[in-house]
Image 1 (cartoon, rainbow over the protein chains, first blue to last red):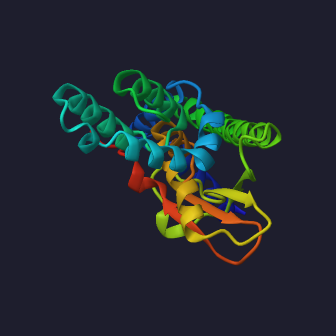
Image 2: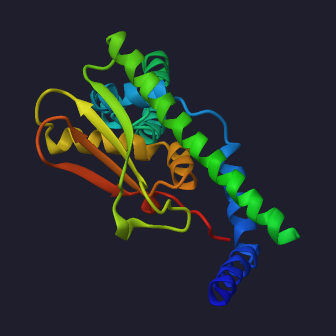
Length: 109
Length: 132
């Protein structure tokens, strides 16, 4: 009986006496990440099925080599292509880039 | 006494995290269902919790059930490329990956409802957390 009580006391002391420094850091990170705002799940689900095809089409139509004679358009195409690579899995961003490409590069999509 | 308060806070945090996990999964499933009903997605995706893969553990991992699994109801065996595409879309969303990690997930799994294999990723590889 005495041994059981001692064991229980040791367990309680160990549980309560754990260092809180590490826990504080973890909670801080958790709070920071949770406060980042809502996640657009609709965009994620749509991207899973539509992003790849749209990316392939855009990257083909906006390739800088297609605008070689016009240096201004070539620079814009370079910029768009770079951003396409960064957002290849985000259909919302790809649609924005599509509008920009149609507007600035006069391409037919 | 401060230790007791700290212990109590830890219990409250555990319940809060659990609620956040449920809300995250419910949010994903709601969006997937709407996309499928509206015809934006050709197949239905469903997120659920799985056991995870023990070697992928990190400092935020849950002791049990640390996997975030996405089931694709396609009615056929998915090609590896399709599976990888779905996984890449999830991993490309930094906010979602960070949220998954702090909520105790360490493994992302994608597989179809037919067949015996799928793909899994270690979430820790796609995030820089606990540094600095």
